[in-house]
Structure formats: C-alpha cells, structure tokens
Amino acid sequence: MTTTRAGTAPTSSIEERVEALRALDDPGAARDQAWAWFEQLGREAHRDRSGAAARLNELFRLGVPPAGIDGRTEGIFVTPLIAPRVDAVVRAVSSAWMPWLGKRFDAAAGRGDNVLRSSARLPSKLLWPLYSMGDADGDAAAFEFETGIEPGRVDPDRQVLKIDYSAIERNPRLTIRPIRDELVEIVPGANLGKILLRSRGGGHRLIGYFALRS
Image 1 (tube, rainbow, N blue to C red):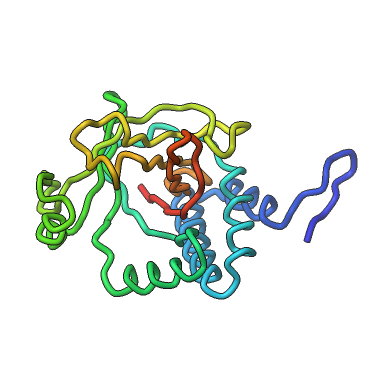
Image 2 (cartoon, rainbow, N blue to C red):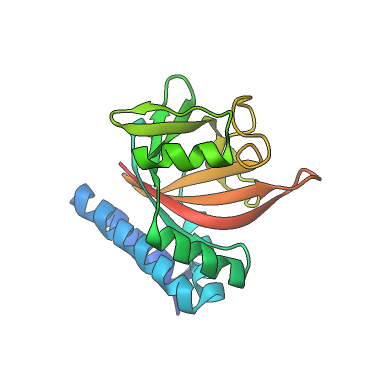
C-alpha cells in the first residue's frame, strides 16, 4: 500500500513506518520496535519468502550507515536467502542451535570481530582445525573484519558500512573470506545487515539478512 503526498512521490507503508519510528521521542522504544520488526520479517520469510525478501530489501535501502557503532552488539540471524530448500535446512539448524551472538566493533581502528557462544569452540575445530578463536568476556571471538563506509555491492546507489572478511589472512579462506556483510542503521541502535557471498568472478549475491542492536 502506498500514499501520495501533494507534490511528492508515493510513499510506501514501509517508508511511513520507518519515518514514524524515527519521529519517536523515545530512542529506546524506537530501537526496540525496529528490532521486533526485524524479527517479524524473519518469521514472515518462513511462509512468504519472496514477499519478506522484498520488504527486507526495501527496509534496508531506507537505512543509512550506522553512526558511531562501537563496542559489542547483540545480533540475530533474520533469515537465510540461499535457495528455498537450503533455507529450510538452515532455519531448522539455526533454530536448534545458534552459536552466533553478535559483533564487536573497534570504530577507531576500523576493525571488529564476531562473538560466538563458548560452546562453538569444539565444533569449530572440526570445520577449521587450524583456526583458533579468541576470548570475548567469557564467550568466543572469531572471524575478524575490516569496516568502512562505501557504496553497497548489490546496492551501489546506497552508502553502507562494509564488514569485510577478505582482508584478514587468518580467516578461513574458503568459507569466511568470501563473505561480505553490509550494515545500515534503521533507527539509532537498530541496524539491519545483508550477508553477501563473493563469486569467483568478483560479483556478490545476497544470501541472507542479520540484525545488530546496540
């Protein structure tokens, strides 16, 4: 559904909702309502994959690069978008056990890493025998990245915060280094991210969405 204001282009219901959240006087309430919206869209993707993907894409494109994101953030895996049958398997596995907890950012250094449950250390050795995780206040720290503001790979007309794993030599080469995350702020403290996979030809394709809350 769209509405048209005098002298303006039509406004979608998603854009209207984002504007309403940004107009709230309580930043904490805006953040939590946006977070609940991310979770809702993830659930919708179970029964309406293409519709939820379109809504998530529109929402992402309304975002801006996060302003001053720093320190530890809480994360959720919103939905995979690899292929319908693969998505169903990924959702089942992640519903049963999700080791990823979020990300940590060092804004001054333009770097960061991922925070995982400490129980992920043993399974990680089966997947990446030569890779060692660090410590994150009792949890595990892994898969470092570099950050910076630049145009999106699949949204070149939008500025995003890139989360680039390819430049970190110690990251697993075949599974982690081809990943590029891109993050935008919907409202302060509530950020929506795209998970992109780099192809051999250098292009990127969308394989899922995640969210971070600070």
